[in-house]
Image 1 (cartoon, one colour):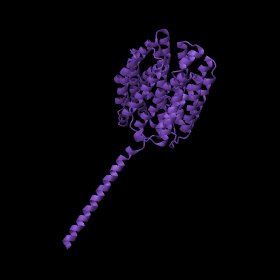
Image 2: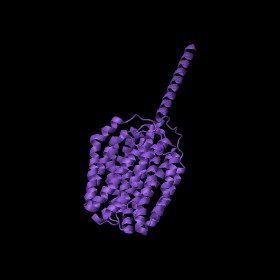
Image 3: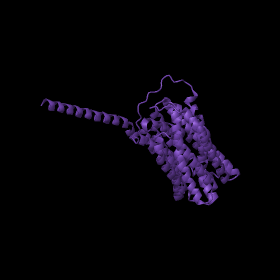
Image 4: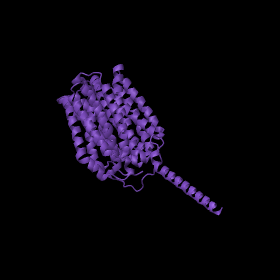
Length: 429
């Protein structure tokens, strides 16, 4: 009996030991897996995404139509159109470095709400501008809240994202404005063709911007302690100097987008005789953006930023070259898809690279820096495109665009990729 009891005790001991081992392994597995289970699509992130989409949709609903509006309403020449339309870019460039500092230094929710309110109110000014000078003033003034709001909104998006899903989340966040920039122009052209009423389009943009403003008022941002003992003045408060080569590189790509997005309607009409195909062009562009974001999300989550970016710049270079060739409608539409596929991978990768070079208390500055570079490129593109089109042709303007895209791609391959890897900071919450 004693021997059988001893065997039973030993058996019980091993059963208990095995149970403890299983429980311990399950605990470790759940602890390891918990970061991966953090919710990407949380409620606050969706609100920020929605407000960002409406912000860009309201603004870019008018973008391809403003050259037509200025030409029809005020009989302006091509170079004057370029100057008037580039006014908002100048204002945006001036405000964005300051807004990055303000977003990092003050309550982000209040900054975002105030900026968005001014942004939506100014849409009423387009309908009331009766002269070319008044229109130019309204357009220029609109760049101030637009620049500040985009910086504040993107910084808030980073704040509401879980740190383990930040790379992926930033990529999807960028999809909201990229899709708006692609879909809104086609929607604007469709509405104009259906109504032939520019004033109606101005008020539609006003209403959409108001809905975006309402979304921002509902966002709940995690409590954030303001950084104490920050130096009163530093250039890093206004521009992320550590990312200067990234900024130069993204400027090239912004220039190409500025020419393409502002002159595509006139270019298609004059070069290929396409009077109603711009909407299809932007639909294909948005499809490319959407597909590339879905395809590239895994690479972003794994931190393969340079690989994503390289694929993007190559695809975009092919797209802009096809666009400049303008052989027929097929190359015209294929170029839209290729540009969308390329920009959908390139831009979020660049945004993540800016964030990874910056400290966690410089997120606003990092966001403003990439946006300043992009907008400077867009502004130069609008001016350069209008100037070349006026004195040479739209075809020449888009061949210069393809050359600028190729130059940006070569810069990334030869220098920017190594520049980023040498300055990348470790992950921070």
